[in-house]
Length: 217
Ligand code: B16
Ligand code: MG
Image (cartoon, rainbow, N blue to C red; front, top):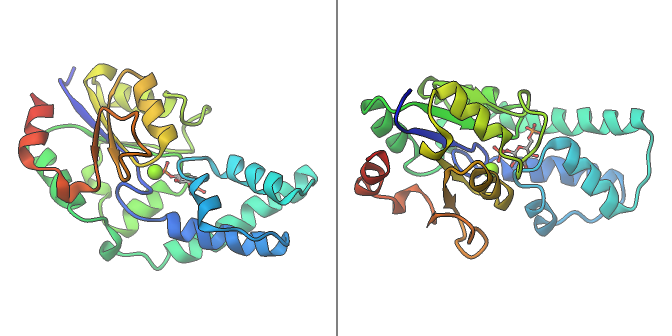
C-alpha cells in the first residue's frame, strides 16, 4: 500500500473545458429554442453528459423519445470534440504541470477522477497523460458525483486508503463525493461556492510547496 495518493478532477482543475461544453450545449439549446446562459452552464459542472441533457430538456420544457435523446447526446459530443481537437498545452491551467511534476519527483501516485468520457483524449491533447498512474472517468463509473464511486475506484487502483487520498475538485458535487469517500477535499475555485471543502484555493498558483509537503506527510 502506498501512503498517500493524489486524485485530480479534469474539467476546471487541469483544463478549462467548461467553456467548450458551454458552446456545444448552447448550440443544441438554440435548436430547442431555449436561451442557454453561463449560469445554466454552472449547473452542468461535474455532471455527466446524460444528466446535463436531462437538465437542459427540463429547463427547455421539451419532452422527447429515447431515440432523439440519444441523437442529441451524440450531436452535442461531436460539437464538443471539434473544440477539443484544437486544444494544446497552452490550455493547461496555471501551475498544474509544476504540481504534477513535484508529486512525480516524490514518487507519489497520481489518478484522474473525472465524469468525462473524453478525459483520455483531453489529457493526450494537452500532453499530461504520462503523469497519471491511473485514469478513472465517465466510462468506468455507474454512479455520478456526489457519489464517491469515481474516487474510491481511483484510490483502489492507486493502492491507497481512501482517507489517505487528496482530491482536487472545482465542482460542489465533486467536493461532496470526496467528502463522502472520507478523503481530503481541496476546492479549486470560489471558496464561497466550495465551502464544504477541507481546504480552498483559487487556483494552483496560490498553493505553495510547503502545503503539498504537509499533505504528503
Ligand atoms: P463528457 P469533470 C465533467 O468533467 C464536466 O465538468 C461536465 O460539465 C461534463 O458534463 C462531464 O465532465 C461529462 O463530460 O461529455 O466529456 O463525457 O469536471 O468531472 O472532469
Ligand atoms: Mg470539474
